Length: 323
Image 1: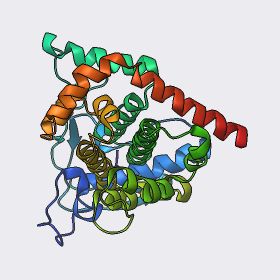
Image 2: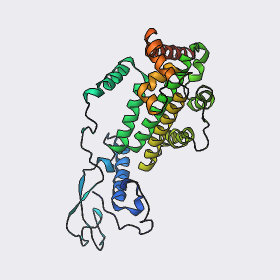
Image 3: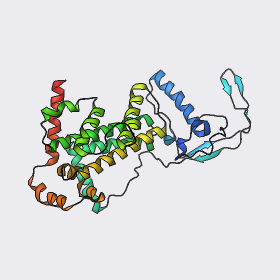
């Protein structure tokens, strides 16, 4: 339970996408949540209690509240109190979410969509990075939308992006016929930004500079560097910052897939593994070349997924042996 004084009138006409984004100086509920969060953060650190950090998304959909027209502050042995204020009746406030514990909000799997479920089940059992990327991204969305854990949402968003970029780069190099021993050093830990700047442009074309307003630059500044602040600087991000980080990863993935679709004739195996016919059709890139490759060449070759996975494993062994 928390009590706060009235809102500031400045900024009341601001435009916010969700009530959680409204700054605490302009919103009583967010101010109360922030106050409780600050107490719990100190409590957890002092006593090592692994309790959840309260957030808007973790509150019940309906919460009680009271308003006092005037505040009367008293002080006794137990501390300051507002109990003697002129409190009105108890009301209820409905929050802008419908989060229920362990309630899945997703589409029903219809018979015509079972092939998609089977496909991702196969990816999971193969240990495919494509599956891991989507799993981390979904976890980031849950951390943001359901649990209200904004720091975790940013770190998971960045993890998803790293898995995406490295798995895409590795698959492109595998299809290019690169020897794992010749390129293993490129995948050294802590060099993701360097890989992005130095490798992708030659393979996929497009803009991969880390400065500017491209999807790659937006991801770098709003997710990659924000994750660094959270993990290494102990920064507690706002919900809006976490949403922006998550959005930047989604835009980055769309950019990667768009560039891959553009280079489908150079990397048809990678395009078919990661975009499939549906993804190429959505981008207007399902052409006669891809139809022929999919129906005539692909069936005669060994599993691309297993080959590319083996290639990545060889790279990891080399990295570990060199470390």
